[in-house]
Length: 149
Image (cartoon, rainbow, N blue to C red; front, side, top):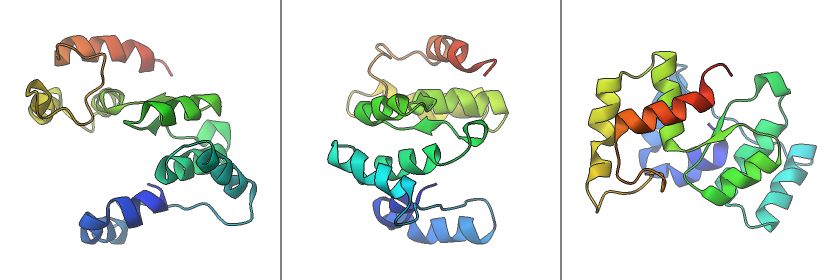
């Protein structure tokens, strides 16, 4: 996870982040100042990308192509910026597919957690193309994008 999100955007769960770092389940990375990644971070911010996403895109693009994680964001503009910089990008549903495919999340747990998307007032993070929301259909559609990569 990148530093801005961990230390600022998620400060309300800061204790949990520190605990995950302490046990080795989470690594927080930042962009070093006065580097090519820092220059890219500044350019992304100037183009309107949020600080957290700008830092993540700049950090990921500083890695060797075969070591880059998938860039996940609910912000469509940030995903487009990530794609423009050669990243594999996805939204929350893509993350769910990747977690299920990796065996880190069961379909049953995903269904339970994402059932909130069935409620009109609980739409945060729900991809716009999932109307009406059907986990099985969404999973099958998105899985095609990721399997074999």
